[in-house]
Image (tube, rainbow over all chains, first blue to last red; front, side, top):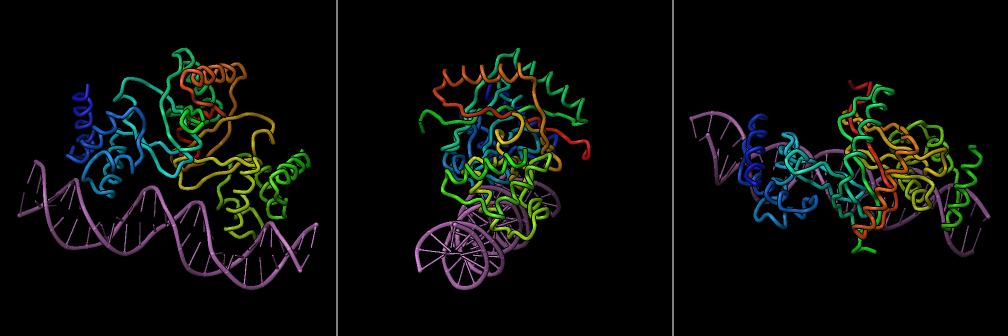
Length: 145
Length: 145
DNA sequence: ATTTATGCAAATCGTTTGCAAACCT
DNA sequence: AGGTTTGCAAACGATTTGCATAAAT
C-alpha cells in the first residue's frame, strides 16, 4: 500500500513537472503513517533534517500536484494530510476548539449520497460549481475535556 | 428585527461585562445588513471611521460574547457573521476557492437532523464532545467561472 | 553543464498589543 | 474621578521569498 502511494506521488509530481525528492518522500511517508493531519511543526519533529522553509515549499508543491491536502481551521497552524484518493476513503474531521487537534471520522455512505445530492441541488440553484463538500464537527477532544 | 438584534447584543455584552459602544453597534449593523460574511477590510470600507485595530478588538469582544461568529477559510482574511441565533436560521457556507467569497445556503431540515444524529453517534464512539457541525461546499462562484 | 532543490536569513502581511488621549457613567 | 475604548504605531508570528550552495539528471 505504501508503495502504491509513492508510485502515485511520483506520477502526479512528474505530470506537474516536478521531482519526487528525498525530502518530499519523507513528508509523504510521515503523512501516510499518521492517523491524523499534521501541522508543519509536527512534521518538522518527525522528519529529521528538513529545513522549515523546505517543508513549506515541498508541501506547496505536493498540494499543487494533488498529493496532499491542506486543512485550515481556526487554529494557528495549517494541517496536511494525504489526498483522499491516495488513502482508503472519503472522510471528515473532528476539530478540537481547545487544542486545535484534528482527527478523522466517516459517515454512512447513504448519508454521503444525500449530502452530494443536496450539494448538487444548491449548485443548480446558485450557479456555483461545487468541487467538494467538507463536514467538520467542532467541539472538545477527550484529552481537553 | 434589527432592534431585537441590538437588544440581544446589549444583553450578551453586559453579561460578559462589556459595553455596547457606538463602534460595536456599527459593526453589528453592518453584519446584520449584509447577505454574506464580511472580512475586516470589507467592514472597514462600510463602517464609518473605525480604526482597524478597533475593528479587530471589537470583533474579538463580540465573538467572546457570542454575538458574532468568526469564519476561517483558506482565504487570507477571516470573515465574520452574526451568531446564528441572532439571525433567522441555521445555515452553511458556499466557499469560492478562487476569490474566497463566502455565501450562505440551507439544507432541508430532515437532512440536518440526520447530520446531528450522525454527529451524536460519532461523539459517543470517540469521546469527543461535539458543539456544532459545519458543512462547507467548496468550488467556484458564478463570478469566477 | 544545466536545471532544480535546499538551507539560511530576511521580508511579508494579517492580526495583536502597548500606550496616551478621548469617552462614558 | 475611575474605568473603558479608541487610534496610532510598533510588535508578533505563521508563512513566503531571495539568494548562494548542494544535489540531481
